[in-house]
Image (cartoon, rainbow, N blue to C red; front, side, top):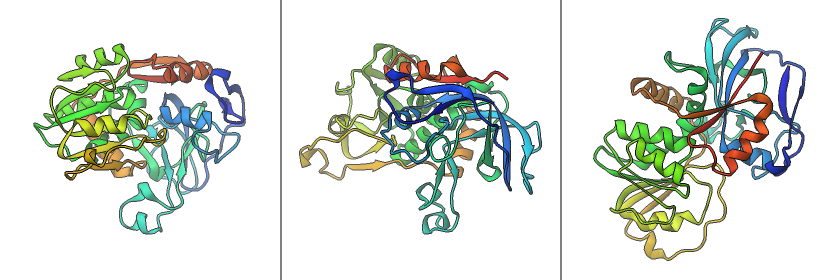
Length: 333
C-alpha cells in the first residue's frame, strides 16, 4: 500500500515524510482493517513529525482523523460489518484496568496507545484499529467533511465541556484553526457568545462568518470580560493574556497536547478563583456525544483537500497558518 512514512522527526520545512510502498497491515483479534478514504491533518501530527512529542515509534505513519470503510474483520470482531463507513481517532487503545479506566477517565489511562504516534495511523491506504475504539460516522457528512470531526471536533468538544460555559455566557477562543472553527459551531448551538483572538486576518474573518461576536489579534483584549476561554494555539505566552480577559471565577482551558513554555505572570491574574485546566486526550464517550451533536447541528467543516502524496505540503501550510479551517488528505486507491 502507499503511505507517508516518518523515519525520524525533523522540521517540516525539510519535507520529512516519505511517500512510499509499505506492507498493508493485517487485523489481529478484535481488530478491523479499514480502507482509508480521508485523513485529517492535525497540529498534533505536526508535533509528532517535528519531534515536539517524544518519538514513541520509529518509523511511524502519522494521522489520527481517519474516515474509511471496513474491509476485513479480525478474529472475533463483530461490531461493524464489512463495508461500513467508520472513523478512527487519536485514542487507539487503553488498558481498561488502571485506576483511570476503571473510573471512566480512560483519557488519562496509564498505558494508552495513540493512532499515528505509538501505532501507525491514517496517512496510508489502509489502517487497523481495535473495533471498540472505532466510531460510526453519522450520515450526511462527506468523508473529507467528517475527518476533522475526529480530533479537532472531539477535542474542541471536550474543551467546551471543561470550560463549564453556560447558555448566554461569553467564551473566548485563542487561536482559530481546525478545532476552534468546529467548536464555535457547537458553542453557538448552545447559545454561547464567542470572542475570537487570533493572529491571522483570514482566521478572524472566518470566526466572524461563523458567528463570533468579536474577532481581534491574539493579544487584543476582548470588548467584554469572558466567563471562560480556550487556548487552542500551542503558544504559552497567550496564557497571561487569556487570564487577563477572564472575569472573577472564570475558567481557562488549554486545549493542546503540546505548548511552548508559559511565562511567569502576576498572581493577580489568577487570584479571585480563576482556574486553569488542561485537556488530555478524550474518552470514547466524548467522541460518541460529540458526533451526535455534530449531526444534530449539523456541523459544517471548512476543509482544504490535498492528495496523500502532498502530506508534507499540507503540514507546511498548517504550520504557517495558511489553511482557514482544516486540511484533509484524500486517499486514492
